[in-house]
Image (tube, rainbow, N blue to C red; front, side, top):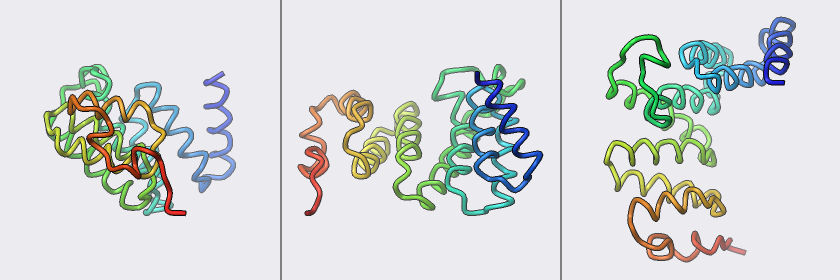
Length: 169
């Protein structure tokens, strides 16, 4: 089914090269197929049409982070060895840009939190996960990540409003 979705998106892009949603959808499929280099080109194409597209920056960040987040050697993903620190720096730069453009993009905070956690930057990881939970307190996987990093129950880490998911009504 995924290949038919890919083909349909490719047809839409051929018919309308400025179709940002189709370009983003195709780039996401390509990234999920573990072809980050090809996906980066697609995201860059979106950014040429829409320089402030948060989802394109998110996708680029996830491409750069893929090796670390999914524990896959860079050679396997990129067909060559790449410097891990460069990949981390590029990932964080793009994820920060995504979050800046769309402060409610929890995926950007979560990816940064996981990257920081993997690289031993626990304080930064906790801050990213807290930021994500402020946007959407119902993310159980993020709560579990926080507990794992800190070794503390969630209610000790978060303020009551975040933990209880309360709004200022």
